[in-house]
Image 1 (spheres, rainbow, N blue to C red):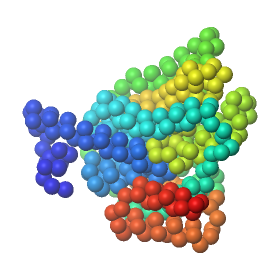
Image 2 (cartoon, rainbow, N blue to C red):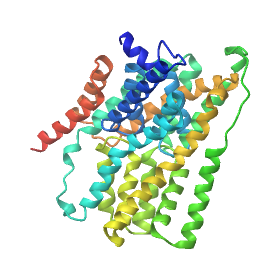
Image 3 (tube, rainbow, N blue to C red):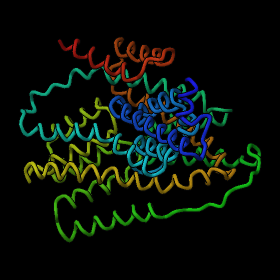
Image 4 (cartoon, rainbow, N blue to C red):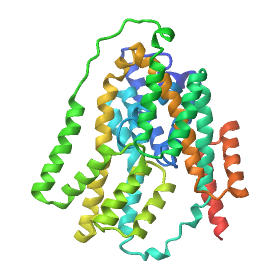
Length: 415
């Protein structure tokens, strides 16, 4: 990276002058540009998103260090909501405050949300049985290789001693054996507690700033939750009821977009029967190959739930579902991130982060195992996984290039 680029990124100079403000403005514009790039290239869910965040935001741009990215990601995993979305907006908040974070949120979710909304409208005009998704058959082994490479990379940076290694292995095994959305936050908390015990031996005492907690975003989260529930009960207005449904789900789901599936299936397919099983599975398959947050699947579900009200109902349903699913996690991470830097100054918290990072690396290994589990263990899949891992580990080829190659290979395979 040349000197000019480092100046723009803020490595050398932060002068309180008009020129300094201009440089910081350029840095934020560059970050938004990078977020747009991630929004159209990041495929595979939270763990593969994290690998792509590390490659671009840490290794290429140096907005933050790997340890800081892991800390923010672990923090977001302990909160309900879309993990990768919260992580990216938390990074933006650290770089430029709330305005940059909200712009980042919009840029990150907009491409996938628009695509899913377009598919929802398109289903009204095409016969669903002619849609063929077999060309996506090679994407999953490529993503397994991507996540496995990220797991190895994170482990090398976070494991410092036998306790950290034990936490990594334990978190990987337990989360694999018990795939509950509540296991991940419990494992991260336990890992933090186990390393926090030794904080006096590993961290010297330092002068701390007084902890100042701003409650506005927490109150906003609770307030919107209660207001949506009361308004839906009183008005029985379809978009309000749908917003409340998704806001409730977004406030209670831990573990990323995959954890949405059983809840949404039970509510909208089994109970309310506003989607057929085929429609539900088709939409979920699309989100697996679509870049951006998997939570964009809710845009599709909300749009189809609005079909009885015509095209206007589809638009309102998609919009209400999108706002409902993304807002609670955003409110919560903005509440925590405002005093997170002060909270980290406490030795017990700093020591606890070591265990949280080690357990987080174990969860990344588990994600690779879980993605591999449904794949046939044939020669081709194993070869694709190994090849993807080696390319990412030993070259500078971007992950999106591998995903695109997997799509093209799938098309050729079908032909």
